[in-house]
Length: 180
Image 1: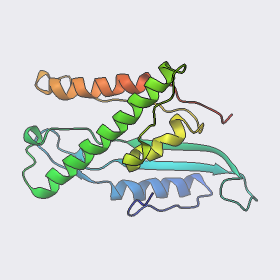
Image 2: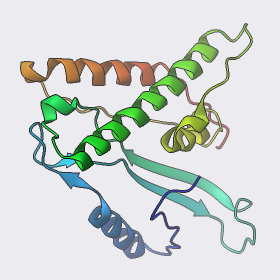
Image 3: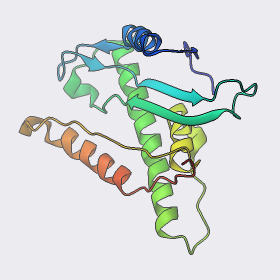
Image 4: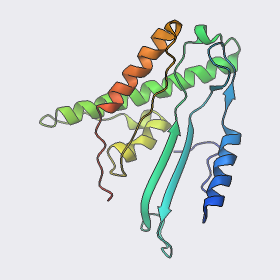
């Protein structure tokens, strides 16, 4: 999977990690919309791999992984008043990737609930973000946790319901943990 601008950085201290997080924060895309003064215009990802020192191979020494993802929220172009082409493209990309991730979660949930049936293929390859979550949901790399933030304002009722439905779907998926 190619992600533009993605880099792997070796860190050896807490200070190194803080520098990398600050660098990532500077690259995070935010912009003002009619719904939010600092709306995330892309998903943000911070992945940490704890590797045993002295190993030569990339995967042999992995002890644990931690991945923190800030998914940009879905929004309607008309409500966000995204009138320029770039904002509309960002909104469409965000909504498309969230829709694809939701499809993957639905299939994983169905497969878990119907273990007596033939498993349905999960469309992991349909988006980069869903490929990332595959390792955590079915690859055995640990547990996935979702925190959903919503606006209680009645004006945002539709967006809030959509976010809560997505979170409810995610909460029904059991991540398979093989790593101690």
